Length: 119
Image (cartoon, rainbow, N blue to C red; front, side):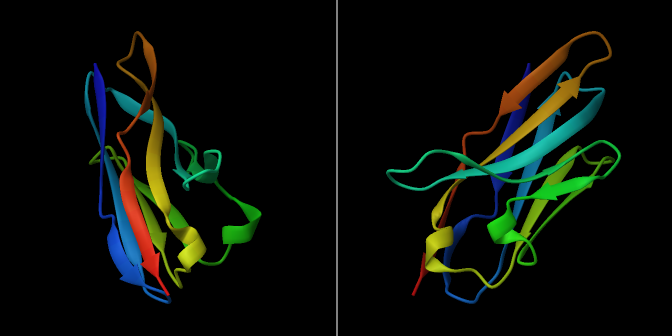
């Protein structure tokens, strides 16, 4: 009933930037908390950044200063601006969001978008 669609991934050279988008659609009245996670080959999925409905943000310690999460409630969209990218940032990036249609709450995940950083 809720779909999250990520976009903006791709191939970039080290030191470059990418901006990921996560658009929520479906049975949505509002988006509560949302976040970005990533999973590199052979590694566990890890939290990259999260943002609450009050725009409070949290980041993985290793990413502070390079990544910025933001949201546009008018578009039900969450963004991840990634700067000074490093090869170790290569991973599939997943969007996660808690939404409500005013009656029910949904915890949804996107399909993921590949980010590859070349050295």
